[in-house]
Length: 209
Image 1 (cartoon, rainbow, N blue to C red):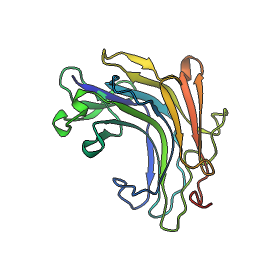
Image 2: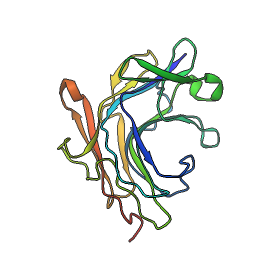
Image 3: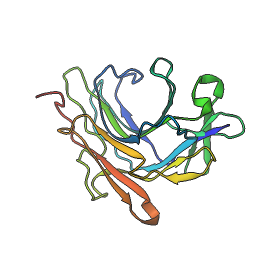
């Protein structure tokens, strides 16, 4: 089975640091699939609103779709992709039609059977001075999508390779620093935006009491 992870738009801003191991300094404002060992996903899709948050050296501010499978010691993860039902490879497709490339199934020990976890939203990594950068537009989540960064047309691909809405009963909110960031789910917002949520915040000293 090949998997496709379709990202319509993705943005990440990084200043001079490898983000492969955040080392506990990350902060999240996301919606993610609820734990369910009986459910597999062959892909995920969303429109991601684009901003260019200001980051300093050694800071990261990112908006992305994250897909995982496997136990913690053998975790497989990619930051976006669709699974090809014929080959088992994971594809990155943008704007519904442009195939950017794929991750060969041989890279994975668990994702070749589909994903068990999908996460949508933003995360940041703080600099040595403890300051976390802005996320999204730098404003807390609100219903004004002209001010808050947002995800729209949030969908999941099931094992029949059909896209289904990622609704609030499938997802759970996770924000680990409410003083710096927030995330709010708005549900169905019409045919253009579909299932949507907003996220973001100004950052700052998120670990301070």
